[in-house]
Length: 387
Ligand SMILES: Cc1cc2nc3c(=O)[nH]c(=O)nc-3n(C[C@H](O)[C@H](O)[C@H](O)COP(=O)(O)O)c2cc1C
Image 1 (cartoon, rainbow, N blue to C red):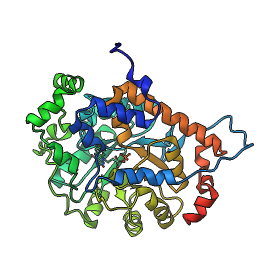
Image 2: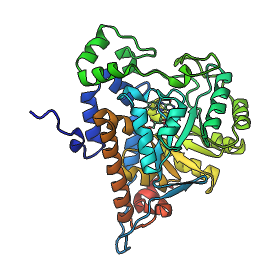
Image 3: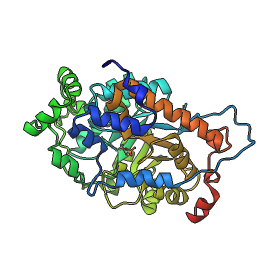
Image 4: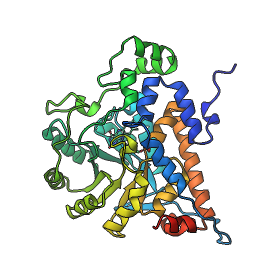
């Protein structure tokens, strides 16, 4: 048997990467990535709702040359997608953060650095060659947040993402079942799980367990990441303080309600990220894609909207753009790809998505991603959905 076979050769779509990473990663790690909150259904509902939106092939359009470049704020990117913030990414494989950052530099797309990332803001900015956006939650201490903002500004970060859909951390049954928590506790169950996945365990052992590096390197004394601490005291006044403290672009992430969207726009945010946190927060929420056209209508045509939650393919990006997004973000697909085959797996999945995006743009009869609008949706569905 050849053990050196390149696993990426077995990846032909996202499902292949999911299955490969399921095999390679300890169950505790795979479930942390794959899991959703409560009844564990919303992540699937997000993707199923995207699938329901069918597009319409159009012919005789001369689609030989196609443009995928997209501008958001004053940045010109090569593709209309970026990488969503994810904490503790290095759990999927040592140096996963670095792989994601490097891929974003290679592609000329943004990568969002979670405040709970396992690599410092400084290193991520350097690995991504300046393609990093910074993401924060408001919790533990506002002093620490303000220190992070100053730190980010000094490094050169131009975009801040304030995630607002985790005022309280939701329960994830799979994590509880597996005894997943932070800091990691390794009892017999976890030991057995790790022993069954020696490649992951040995590499992780060699590189050391991932740490929340922005905390470890903090000067304010806030050196411990208390994942379960309440973030519930955040309110509209908090938004004002953050808006005052951060002069560059500010994105509010995790918005699903039209009234909230209007208020956030009025409060001076520069963009909204429509998202239900990949189904990891309010389990009974609607699919994120259902909220997107309503929020687009509420905020008007020109206000920047970013979308995430359930995007798994090039077609999904087209669907999100058709329903009002300016830009799409991937979460779990990056982790599945890295779990399946590290940086090579990531490159493979992104190549498949890029290719599908370009092909399907042509198949719906367009040559420029900036021309995508609701007219690419199959007419009957379009009417049924009342968009
Ligand atoms: C393992 C994991 C960690 C995450 N950590 C964060 C985080 O630190 N900050 C944040 O704003 N969102 C976080 N998210 C949510 C993602 O940014 C994004 O909203 C979601 O994954 C998108 O859905 P998708 O996974 O279906 O693409 C996390 C998601 C996952 C899967």
